Image 1: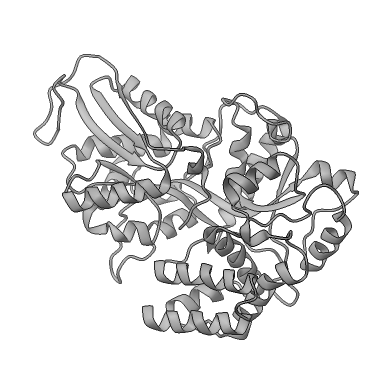
Image 2: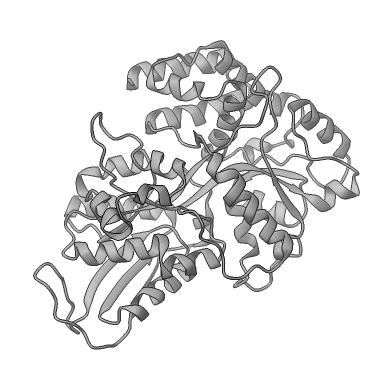
Length: 442
């Protein structure tokens, strides 16, 4: 998955280590201590951002002064290279940032199953702490019969659309709930100094998540049946979903040049500057209102200028908009760690303990566990949006923002690009996807 690119703000890998001096306890046989006698762990990931990770590390080491955590946050592409290099050399970090499906499965043989860690920490019913989609996706792509959890979700999200409420109010327009309303409101808002519907279609990950919202509105769940081979990509309903994706371009809904606009930084910067009425992103957009940041743009301050909404329904499809989303980032533990108990303690603290609270206080994304909220809201609207995302939407997310096969994920992004540029018809795109599925297999 190409991710929503929060990591793009991190221009280069940034390393930091937190060491708080204290009375170091004697290490067990399975512990690894550095020369100072502190129990040492390493963490490598692309997310959360460095400043937030530092707070999470501080929270744990303050409560556990015999521990040192060496944490390195990378730009996402660099992280993939570093992780592959470490796996090849047998130097995997103790705690590892992962995504569900392809990335977790790529390193499954290097990872410890985590269900015993979770049960020891949270009890036999530990799975109930998490949003259901997070539990479902944590085992995405496991071989048949393998019920292990090789990663546990740290952050989750919905994918959806965001409206600039100032533009909508000034244009006396209503947020669309149906496709026809979307077409009408784009027409109504045209002519201003902004894009009515800004689509950053350069990024494969964004093309895919927009399509999956369309496809699940046309026929909920069908696209995943096509992926696993129990149905076909050439099913007329999937062809219809490809057709509606194409209509974003042929019917003038997306702005001119949409296929050349990236989501981060370009699309996000334009939206935050007030140059678009609508944009398809996801729950993570609430991080723009992180109270720990300075110089927040007026629209983002307390989320004053935004409102999230679900992708409009498609004619003849599901009567209500469908909820699509899943894991943003998950955590795994290396099979070769010398500190499995300590790694478990850190991982579970960052998911649902003091470290998790620091993480959520920055509105970095939505917590993977239910009932965890920021300690401070900066506006009633920010709190209202947070409540919508966490208590109304996330419990209802049923459909994944991911395909479990990296080959099909890539093929889908390519097919959507080809439709957008007129190189493929929707039917031809469906044929190519079906041929790819038959090569990959269920």
